[in-house]
Image (cartoon, rainbow, N blue to C red):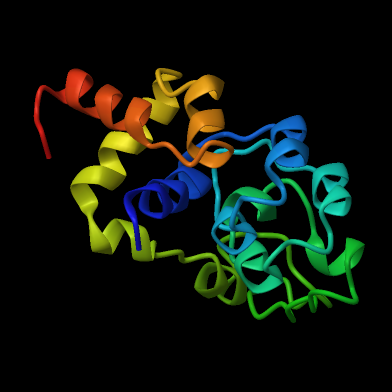
Length: 160
């Protein structure tokens, strides 16, 4: 994978994309990775708008989505409602501590495992807002990672 693709994956998982961002970048962003993004403001409307793009298994395992939307009720053709197996013994359970949900919502990022240093640096830049829309545009539309690499170098005073 080239540098641009490398950064595109990390940004897809860590940047808090808006609905308008997704509309603008939908033809160049990896929705499989984006489906695991915990920083976005998830809603039924957002999920419905890009219904045909999501990786539904990743979306169903995303705790940020779980906290906002019951996918199995709203998208029964895409996601099954997990049978409750906690003390409630309901038809389905919306409690994150219910064993079936707790197992499903444990997410371990492949990107984190591959390069924890870069993952944490990009997460910090996304969380603080230092990584801006102009840089995202350069990365996804112009396939240029230069601004992001410069930001990482200047923010962390390290060339790695």
